[in-house]
Image 1: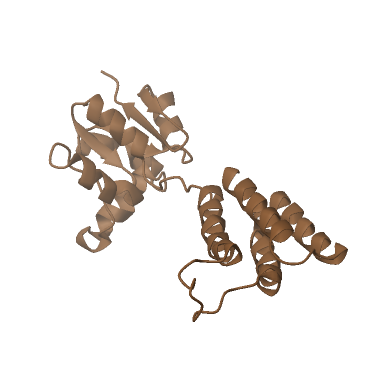
Image 2: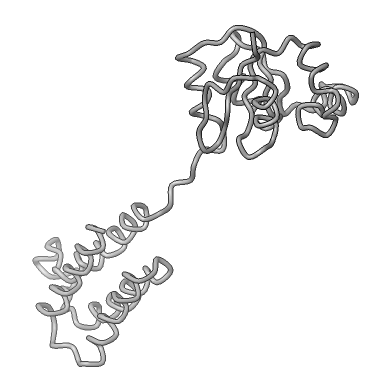
Length: 212
């Protein structure tokens, strides 16, 4: 929150030093806007929107034709710095979205290579190709048009447990020895109960290897 404190300090110095004194109503507006900004990010533009017009009306800006035209008035410098600091603060406060792909699981496979074919979820195939190919070939990726309807409905359907009765047959048919799957989906628990060993888990993915 350092940027927001700096913004508050600059505005307060500017309002107190440059131009005539503010009325109680104006001080209430400025302080109220900062209180709301500290309480919730949705009010962050308020200090800028309220303080800048006040500073502009209070500032005694030099005319461009003045001999000191190239010396910026402090109030003008403040007006320029306000949106910059606000942008820094907004960027700092913006939530950092978690990557949608199994980054941790793939890093584990890169540092702990596993033998055998891998089975993966449809949504993760492209990322796995990018990170693991050609050392590993994926089971499926987002190019649905290259896969047959039978494969999608039966073989991949076995992994999604829509065709759970075919799961063991599919794993044997494709010689799957490693499964990287979203943790929120039940396949990992089903395999673990049947003897597969969980070698990696995070909040997004699990990796299991087939029993010897």
